[in-house]
Length: 122
Image (cartoon, rainbow, N blue to C red; front, side):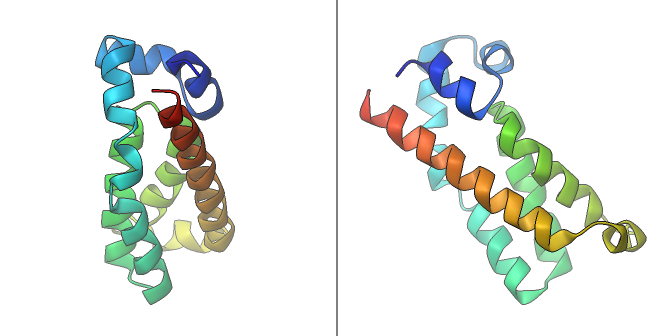
């Protein structure tokens, strides 16, 4: 599997290439993504109903997703980050947060699964 094939499933290859310049660097950093703790921290904060923790973990995951151009995951993580930003309680009430968390879980699993498959080809 090539980096381009990986990104066809999980993100925006052109954006990743703009940020990281070449396929070798993209590969080097994208395979480290599954070890990033922010997804686990988000799920833990969600279970504890810790609004501050949800925001912090989602904001971190959003940044990592943006830097790696993981657009399929970035979009729902960005939505939850903005909903849990201070002063956005009304916005949270308008959005089905449970559905958004389920979407993040699904996109995260898809992303990590594709990265693991890519890793096997290195």
